[in-house]
Image: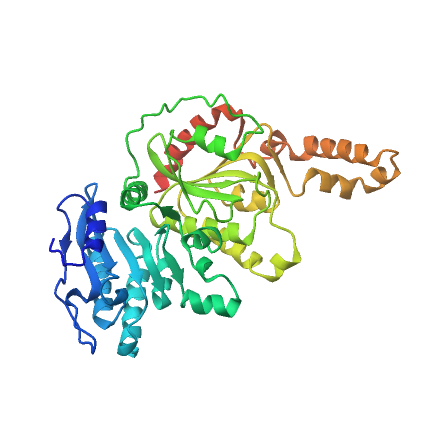
Length: 451
């Protein structure tokens, strides 16, 4: 690997790849500029292995013309992505650029078109990972969303324009515009934040492992009983107990926290996990639906079984959400579920009310549904149902709150208990929480043949 005097980007590539495995391509390509003619065009591209997995890599070198992208550098990036598609290997892009080379005008814009098209064609065919190393401004910012996972260093900045301009227009603090923290919490573009090159390598290795190794040897016991699980266990404890110990890799953890998504393993089998975190919000929001839909797209691309841990009381109920993107985002999410041919397994660990049942648990949507014996399934919350059905009786009661509670309990037992719903054929089995792991492993092995 030939290094220039500007070797910082080579050092990072050396950190995340196996020793001496990086083979650079189009090393001496250069365009013509009134400023200078940099060899390599400020882009490093080539192929390497990461833990023996072959990958394609392209990276901006910010020390060459601020990592700006012109016709030749764009072509170099596009060629790397196109070659990765042909070779059927993952592509990793490291972005650190101030944007387009203005002096090249429309040629630079045409180059961006080629980059985005190449990434769009790669998505769904090969694993695609974008890394935000430093600045990523202008048209290059859109590349960050053309991937399965976007990782960002803590000091990275992502913006469609200069943060100074955006802050000025919005009268905001420029230092807080486009940061990795903002895009991990607010926009949901950043899947995870990394501390250094070693942390980046670990996360890339984990992601590629889940996507490219559908089955591995598991050190965990397939018959382990989850003795600590109860009807009121927090979703974090459910995830920790049910899946192979230490295997859950959460994505976009800070974004739309009522929905948890990530990869995990069940007896060594790689699966996609979608879980409702009712401790944050028992209603699904537009952002939560968007987060789930994006994750499902990756699961579909790589045929991962999908495991739903359901505790959802429906969609958020307010006019602002209705007038915004709620309906469209939830519709897109349900389309992903219904279009997926993957194995789809649901465990109702709490509530499955209205949309919570239709989207995540319905026999029309998933292959196999089980419920904890404490689960509640229904069209309406039991209190809302009692208020509707027994309105007159509650109104006449001396203690209206007590009457409401009693009627709600009666309605839940008669109509919404997991056993009652299972008797109607809409749930495959009602189980003790402690047996969840065994049932999930058996269902994953049985329906995983759909892959």
